[in-house]
Length: 568
Ligand code: DON
Image 1 (cartoon, protein in one colour):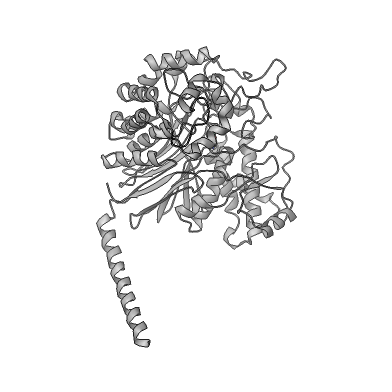
Image 2 (cartoon, rainbow, N blue to C red; image 1 turned 90 degrees about the vertical axis):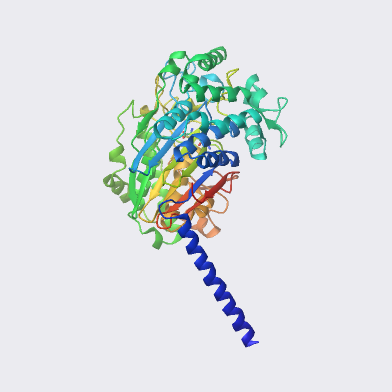
């Protein structure tokens, strides 16, 4: 008996040593200079498109173009050529970092009060459904810009997978149908949108093929003519014609004038980690860094759970107050970014936090609860050279404005709703804004999209998520988890909670707080609301600098796929 178990133990030790040697050998093969590549995106077909481009010799930036374009085809509810986004890039060769701002712009004929009636009240739905809700798309220009300036392969090659998917179609899944059901009436109101994305004017059956020949032709025009393939010529004319026939205000000049802007990312530090995140017109980087600056004054790891959660909520509350008051398009308003992300500002905010009591939010501008956020999209990419991309792209609400100019296949965004239509009146996510985010011709609406890198000497995490106003607090919770040794899997799975200053309420997912924590937070004066559905769709990658190894994970709440590839 004794010798039997000894033998077995020796055998096991032998096997363990052997596998250890194998792991070291494998690590040697994958190399230290040539690291692993990885892609995490919210759709398996988009991840496959990116992997195809990496295998064809493309870098992370080429793959980002391919993934963005594929998502434009297979996630018509989330992002697309009719929308915009932010692509955060890191080039390994010279550590250059930039944010490609492909955010939509208000049409030149837009006016400050365009969504108000004669009595000065906001007309409900006008900034959400139909062509008047659509701002001038930025994604096509951004894809051309990234390909030309940072890519290695021609656009003709990187757009190939998307063109194929548009031409041959993809199968409807239950996730697609959930979002259709949410927007069915608005989709039925536009014949072209209904023809393309519904089946016999109703929710498609699972497995039904969505084929988009018009979108394939538009993507081809982009591949052949670059930005002129979208912003001039046939496609531009069809876009403007369709919008104007539907009651919108676009002109050809809007399209020719659209320009991508490269912006310096917002940076900050937290517990030895360097944060690189979205710059205005996203509020993401500023709000994230403010929250982390506030929290760096607390020994979070040593606090009991109730106190820890309490101070995180209080940090969220204070940073979202800044958002409402100060942030908008930096090309139109001077934004106090340096002050807001500075440590002195955070110290002031931190001092006002009472350890045992929630601070009532009462005195500041009203903010209402956001709607469920399941549209928009995020992907993270790392190539074998260490180039990386975090990109969050959007057409705003599910299926955007539910309006498709005939002949183009381009479903338009309703990003105009991210402006403050009237001071103090909340948008679809319950966010209110001030002058900094009022409507003006050519202006970019304020966003919460927060593609982010988090790095130190050991490695770098690449992450982001959709989710409307809750995006930034999701990224915050992920950064805190990462700082405490979390993996991509734990970052994306983490139960979530959120506070956005007003209404004065903590929203949380089932499982985020147990009964004891609920009791302890209520005793401190917090109003809690458990959400009936989970939110977010985070895509995360971690690159270990010492081993060159990558790990990646897609949010279990979505249908995304993450893949790690040995070497290019
Ligand atoms: O730019 C923004 O902040 C919004 N248009 C993002 C919308 C979004 O994430 C929707 N949700 N899942």
